[in-house]
Length: 104
View 1 (cartoon, rainbow, N blue to C red):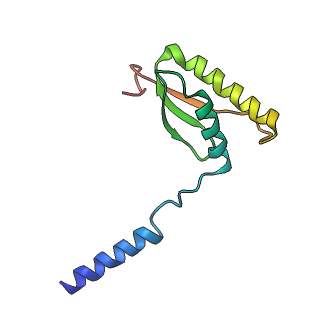
View 2 (view 1 turned 120 degrees about the horizontal axis):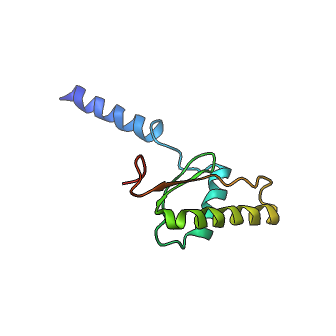
């Protein structure tokens, strides 16, 4: 019983100190998050995740994928214009519903 408790305490300590992500975004993720908020008005596009390199991974339907990508590119251009970044790249991956290999 005592050894089980010791193991549980060690596992909990490791998970709280070493095994969890820090919860801090990269600069690229912060910029991508801003682009997402600027373009979060397409009814069929849903955020899946933002990769550490700033790539937006979204799920949606083909009819709004191109307009969404255009919106994100315009938001990235606005960031460059404001001087918050000098990188106009705004990588977007749209997983299309109903496509083989796409979102389900």
